[in-house]
Image (cartoon, rainbow, N blue to C red; front, side, top):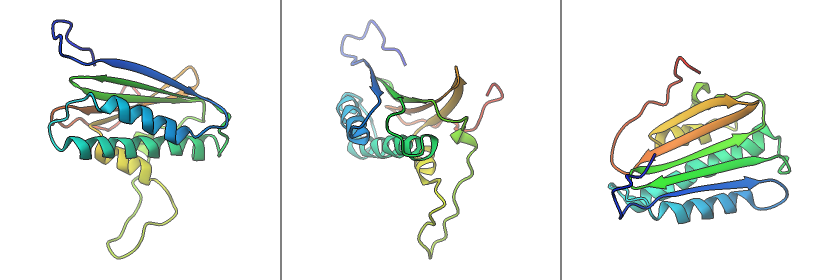
Length: 163
């Protein structure tokens, strides 16, 4: 997402967090995302949209530490945010085993029962909240990119043939 250089009112940010070691990663990612999302002019329910994006982001970061890193917060996680007047994207890069969240099955949820402990709800939330969920394996790392447009649109989260 590039800003139009002719638009002098366009806000643009490209921020990267390199997380490693004992710290409150979730709080740092939430606060950075919250600050950056303030500049994105979402058309429909801006506050609700920002909050939902932050929940999806927090769920995906939690998945990395809980599943890919088995709770080891000393392993590196790179979170890259890009914002502009067109929307918001965030990429998570981890060194965990190969895992494409686009192909993860949706958890089973019945109307009369609480969700089981089987997991999968973070990915389900990200799929529901974001316009797209992309995946690639780069130099032995998982790179998941989530995007949300400032204006309403729908983008597929299904795996592409190139993956």
